[in-house]
Length: 277
Image (cartoon, rainbow, N blue to C red; front, side, top):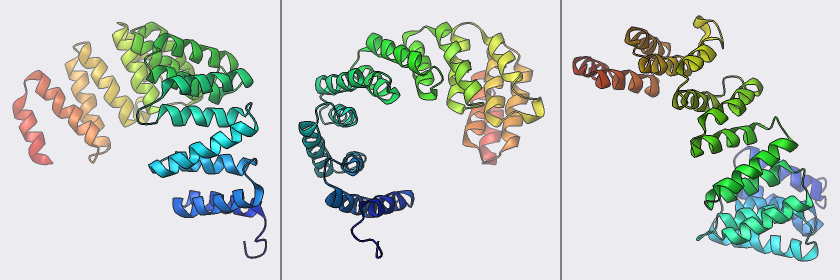
């Protein structure tokens, strides 16, 4: 900055630097300077508006909205600004879902291949209770980018929410091919299999992920719960014991072990375990 005090690119880079260090106030200060040098029509103003809109005060969100309005007045076909306008409207107090959905739909019409536009619109539709349109938007997004992890997860969550557990399995397995052992996907896949009455398939899937000695703690816990539903209690208990031993500091493993005994009426074991913590 000392060598190029009039270069907006330098200030934009400085904003990124402070952002990476978690210093939001300096990040915003640098972003403001970049906008001052380049003007609000430049990309830097959208970066500033996004910063102000994310985790900011009411005044900062208001400023972000004003920047977006000025950008859209200058160019009504600015899809990025429309998406930010949609996000601001959806997270306002109270939310303005009508404006949010309209802005996101306009952005998607301008950029029909935009994954972000599909995600934003689907999220707004879901939050406003329009479950079927949200599912249609997610499906349309997957037609554009079949391997987008967020859309695959959203698709599975949509089907689970609808009770279509069989339909949730395929996007989750596709997601786990892209992101092996992703915890959120593993949990949801296990639940989908269970609610679909396919616990055996869930066990087969999890056990084939890796040799037993390489199972993660989460995989071990999930398998234990599956075996418990099948009434194979000795296997379930052994797996939970192993999960606890894998990391004795893990609250999840310990709680699952305690809850297992509580469900079985083994309160002596519950007391013994509690006394060890």
